[in-house]
Image 1 (spheres, rainbow, N blue to C red):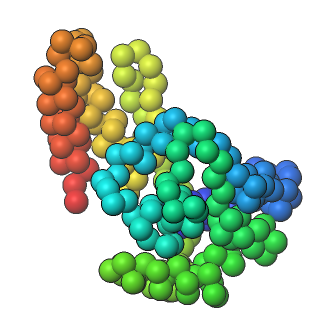
Image 2: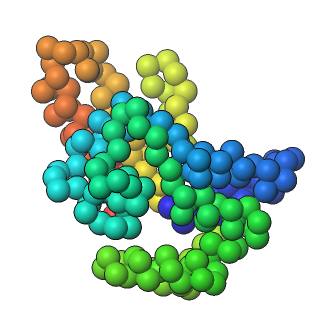
Image 3: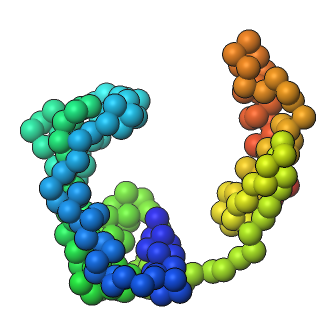
Length: 193
C-alpha cells in the first residue's frame, strides 16, 4: 500500500534514531539474496487457481517461478526488483517512490490493470493521525485504527460476538461462521459506506 511508506517515514522521523539507510538494509539483503519459502507461504500460493498468474505473468513469474515452475516450500526465493526499489528508497528517501520515474511506472502498471490512480494521487499521499479506538473484549483491551481503516469494523464485530461462549467450538463451526459473518456485516453497517 502506498500509504505504508509514508507512515514508516513519519514513525522514523518521530521516534527513530538509526539512519533511514541502515533500517532498510536487512530487507534489501533478504530480497536480493533470498529467503526460504515457508510451508505457510507455499500453502497460500496453492490456493491460487491454476494456471497461476505467479507462473504465467512475466511480472510475477520472475520472482515466483524463475525456472518456469512455481517455487515451493523449502525453495529459495529472491525479490531482486523489490531489493532495487528498497535500495532507491534507502539512498534517496521515500519521496523517490511518490514522485518521478518510480511513481510514473507504478501508475502505468496500475492503469494497465484497470486502476485509476494518478501520479498526483501518489504525490499527494500524506500521513493522517486519527484517534485510536478501543474496546473491552472478554476482559482484554483491544485497540484498532479508526476509519477509514477497517479496525472499527473488527471492534464492532468482536463486541457483537462477545456474548457467544461457544464461538469457534468445532461442533459449532457453521453457526460460529454465520455469527461472525453477520457481525462483520453489522460492523460495516455501523461504520457506513
